[in-house]
Image 1: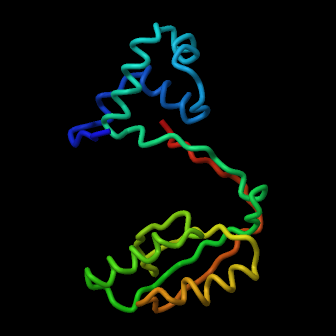
Image 2 (image 1 turned 135 degrees about the horizontal axis):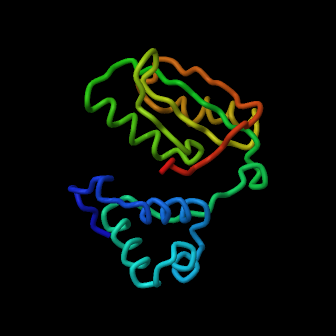
Length: 161
């Protein structure tokens, strides 16, 4: 769908925010189920959701997979410092990182580090292999600092609306 550039959250009303909260909680709800909960007929609910999709507010619908049950028992946050910061070198780094399936999130950050990677992987042995053979092959990394998750306190994909 084509996203519009002139979208603003000011275009949303309380029903739109309620629709977003419901869809973030359970994207498998039918239009009919949602309409009943917000006390509207299905057509305006459908049109509101389609508008938010078109405007890019709703980017996509996904299934959230339990990492442990999928055999990915280790989550690592890895802070990266680049050696150089030219446009070409940074863009190459980003392309290389995006291609690594173990890296599930990547943020360009401020402060002492340049990038923060969230890596989900089977175990420590596989992480060692990943660092040496995958991350180690990415050019221009000056240093990498890994922090290992030992327990998850809060894990939520929803954007507060």
